[in-house]
Length: 548
Image 1 (spheres, one colour):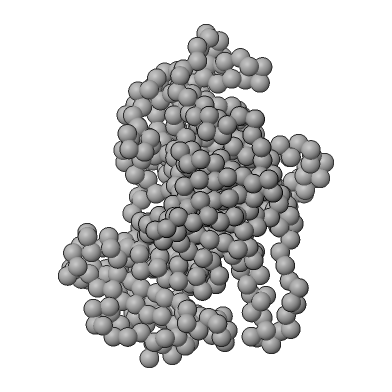
Image 2: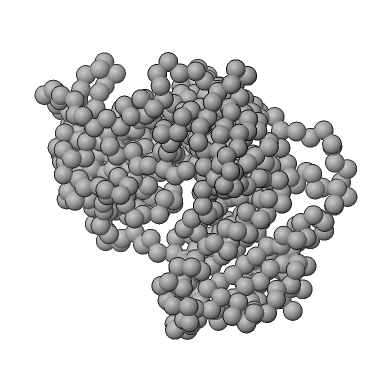
């Protein structure tokens, strides 16, 4: 589909003739905006659950499926259902951030998540590679610098092209796309305001909730509204400058990694451990590498933020147990996300949410407590917050509802990658979780480290080789239950091995596979050192040398 759009030239002609229209897709924030309404009150207003009076104006169409949320999972479910001949309506609406940033159809991943993150990550790696080219005999330009505005514009244009492609997809699949904020009137009725301000009711036999989530802002901290989030960083028109990243989630570390790579003074302020929920040995190795490449780390919490006349931010925070004050150009909150469920008035449809996190409770069929309402993606409780998982769940759901299929989404062994400067890919159990689930005596950890060939003659990287490990279940023929790699292009490597692990590969299967030489991934086919043995790993060197 995308190939047809691009090859026909339709997209480029549209972009060149409709630049004014496309400007409405994403509105970037200024460096430090002023607010006519306190951000905290605006935040609370967004989550008001007081129902508005519903007039009796009913649309004259009943839909087979209504989808609330135009992100990856919702769009996939909608287009799959429409492919079976279902009459589908899809609602999507983006509340602006407290800095005024908004975006077009496609959800978090396309607009303010995976896609721009990967591009900023790649831009950072290109810059780092340029600096290291002298190790390979190139004469390096010492005046190299990033043009932030150029990067933002190019990434933004690419995102707009995807927004437009999704709009075309809605039309070609005969899906009624409504840029409006839907809410439940009852289990079969949704309400929204049209552009004239009228409240319209529509009937739907079945409804899918796929509203995703948004970043948390701690409004109990004075001045928190001056900070930005990942919803803002990719569209801002001015460079972030000296930045304090608050949090140690994968979003925090990914953002801190590319900001450091761009040359900005970057500090990560974390309350406890990095990458909670991930393998902690791998997390610590990521932090060590990021420290080596220039990112600063501190343990503590923000106490207040004051906006100075210069536009900079005077931040008071605890630093390793003591209060300190430091001036930053930008504060980036990366302290978790919340599901956008409160404004849906789920209680009107009898849909239950988790009292712990506000996410929609679902069963293995993605069904909620109401039999004709379903949920997929980040807003569903107990589900991995990963775009590909939402996409697959949405497709399988539509297949079952309209295509007479029976396949269920299997969330076990879903692979993922953290795009830090040295990427971290994983599938299955972390070492900690494997010990808890199988028992320490029932697992074995095979590991190895070696310098990737891309880094083998770069002097300053010698002490930070790639690291790989697999966790096997001794009680089940050494079946691989955990796969972990910290290396360049870990995402590409992990995707391939994920298939093997999904199929139940054992350590013997890995051993019997002939590796591709010279690669870092070939280490997985040569693992012979266990943690239990206590044998030291080589400090670096080429992968083929390390395995001997």
